[in-house]
Structures are given as C-alpha cells and as structure tokens.
Length: 116
Image (cartoon, rainbow, N blue to C red; front, side, top):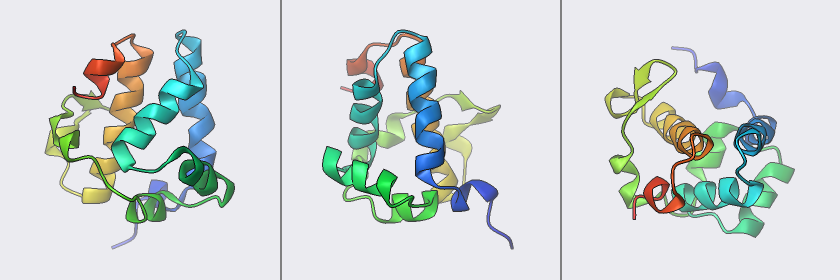
C-alpha cells in the first residue's frame, strides 16, 4: 500500500498556509503556534527546528514530544470527512491540526479550541 502524499510533504510547506488562513480572519501566527504546540507538545524552539529542518508530516508527528491527551475531544468535519471516523492514526493527527486551524479561522475562542 502506498503512503498518502501528505505524509511525505514537509510540515514547513504547509505551515505558511495555516498562518495565512488564520491571518486572513484576523488571527495571529502566535495563535497558530500555540495550537500546534498544544497538539504536539513541541516547544516553540522545537517547532521552529522542525520547520527549519523541513521535516515531513510523518516524522513531525512521530517525533512529537507529547501528543495532547485531549485531542480526542476534537470532533467535526474536515475536507468532507469526520475526524472522529478517520482510522489511519497519522491522517487523524493531521486532520486534528487542520480542524483546530479551521476553528481558529472561524473565530472560535482559544479556550474552546484548546479544549479547556
């Protein structure tokens, strides 16, 4: 079975799109970073290193220091698919991040995005 194309894409190639999506809706790069750090457990320095090293999505999540235990509270539809119904573990992690960025761009409060 071949890997999905997104697995081999670099996180650094998609990250600017997350920022652009958020900023178009009046949100900030620091909020995007906070969401990614919350989800993955990376520090800001570790996140920047992942971007600089052009780590692909597969390694980005494999090397994540501590995936947030509350991430299973993320529900909803991304790209026409319910995130809670995704069976592939890596695709689920990627879609969790997509969903959180979507919520940010839709104006949801950070406390709710971070499932506090």
